[in-house]
Image (cartoon, rainbow, N blue to C red; front, top):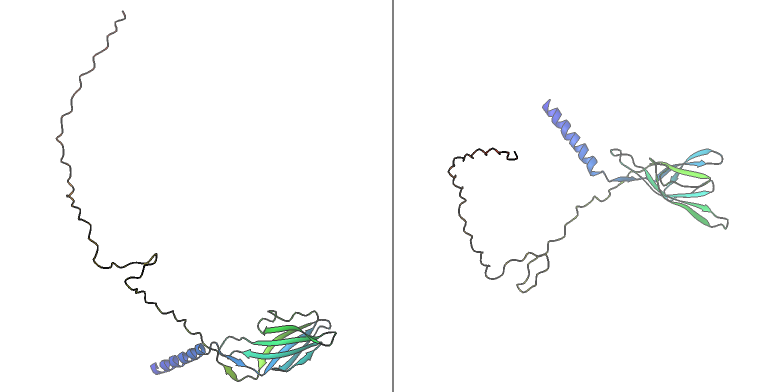
Amino acid sequence: MKLGWTRAAVVLAGIVGAAGAAQADRIKNPTAVFSGLDKITGRIVSFEVGIDETVQFGALQMTPRVCFTKPPTETPNTTSFIEVDEPGPDGKNKRVFSGWLFAASPGLHGLEHPVYDIWLVDCKGGTEVIAEPKEMPEELPPIQDSARAPNDAGRPGDIMAPTGATAPRPPAVQTAPLRQPEPQPRQPARRQAPAAPIINTDR
């Protein structure tokens, strides 16, 4: 029983380690799946497009350049970079959109067109895993030697070491121990003579 738990722990640790190592990896797919909406007719069409292949959707010409997904062990994150052109009245194509589409957030940075909407649904057919470079720890700059020649002048804020003979110490101050005042003998309280009565002489 103990051997079974140990084996299960080792397998679980291997799965977690592999997932952590491939956290930044992504899968490059040869085909992108889109949905398009014609706002005038209300018709929604799903279509597949190969990478670097140009298709016509209504009056728009769309070309996906890349389509990425994540490995199954990670959080799904399907993205595609597309370019959308629209023919102008002079016969030249005008770029109306160039950017990333996100399958999880169709409205984020999506195509803004008065007649058509295009959003990414999925990428498929990919087996090539692209390992993205892992973040390297930032190296600290080397510590510069702050030692100076004896004749170098110090800068404001520098802590200067004493040079030559050490400065003389200040003279010691002699202190006497603090004495408690001696108690004074208690003198008997003097009795005051009673005040003489005032005699009224107005008679």
